[in-house]
Image (cartoon, rainbow, N blue to C red):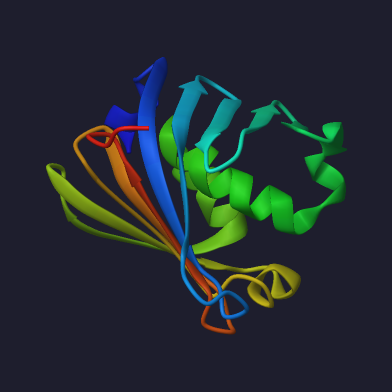
Length: 161
């Protein structure tokens, strides 16, 4: 986690596959992720549609074909839970993770997995667990499991947008 916190900025391609019970086939999103220490995350989706999601401090901004919407993440505990899982991991802030999750770290510094279960009951109604895997100071995979069986798996780096 210390090595994660020493990286000032990163930019990686991603491919995210969402398996949703209401859909007949998985939804695949492709784009770019950007992180700037300490509190900036950007997820730019380039396919199959365009969308830009930015978390800068405590503000979340979503821009798509319908316009721009700004949300204070402190007023949405579920959004805060998702944001902190990624942001605190990238920043190497174990204490921040422990404020929101039951945390279990497994593996070695070269191949590790961080298992997170939400502590907030309202968040646990929507997210069963998050699993963040990586090597060294890089996140390679994020998997989110929901209580109804829906899931999202994001492969990061080494993939083309």
